[in-house]
Image (cartoon, rainbow, N blue to C red; front, side, top):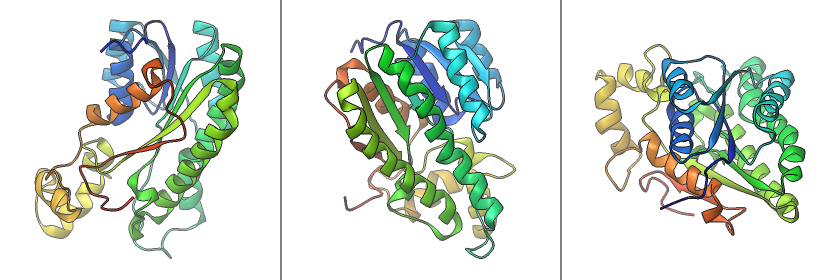
Length: 265
C-alpha cells in the first residue's frame, strides 16, 4: 500500500531505539524526509542518516530549549513539518509510591508530558502554515491500567492521552489530525536494557533470564490473548499509517496495540 508519504517532512522524537527508531526507519522507507530527535546518536540512527539522508538532531526534550531547537532544525532543513510523532519517553520503576520522590515524578513528567507539550506547541504554527498535517502521540496501556511501581509513568501517559484528545478537537479546523497509539509491553530497551530495563527487575524476582521474562513471563502475567508481546515495527506500522494521508479522516482516536492485554475498552 502506497501511503503517499514521499517527501513529507516527518519529525520523530525518541528515535534512537525501540519504537521511535522503527517509526523513523519505516517513514524513511516510505520516502518521507525524516528528522529524528534523541539525546544520543546510536549506530542505527547514523545508518538512517547515511542511507536515507535523515536529519539527526541531538536534543534534550525534557527542557524547553530542546523543543525549540528541534523544530528550528526541522524547518531549517526542510522548510516545515508535515508529521510529528511524539515518542520520547522514559521511566524508572520506583520501589513503592513513597519511594518515588518529587524529583522522580518531575523527571518523568518533564519528558513524557511537558516534552510533548513543548514540541507540539512549537510545531503547530509551522504545520498550520503548510496547510495541516498529522500528529501521533505514543502513549501506553498504562494510561488505562496503572501499575504501582510505575505510577508516575502511568499518570504521565494518562495525561498525554487526554491532551491528544483535546488537541484533536482544537486543531481539526486547521487541518491537523491528532491520534494516539497505546502499546502494551513491547520488545524495546525500556524492557530489555541490561542496566535498568523493566525485565531485569522481573528476572531477578523470578530467578529466570530476561529472555524468559520477555517470551513467557510477560505474556502470561499480562494475559496476552496472542500469547506474546509486541515487536517495535508492529507498533510503528500503525503510527505510520495514522501519520499518512491514507488515514485522512481519522482523528481523536486511541489505538491500543497490546496483543489483547486490555480486556475492556
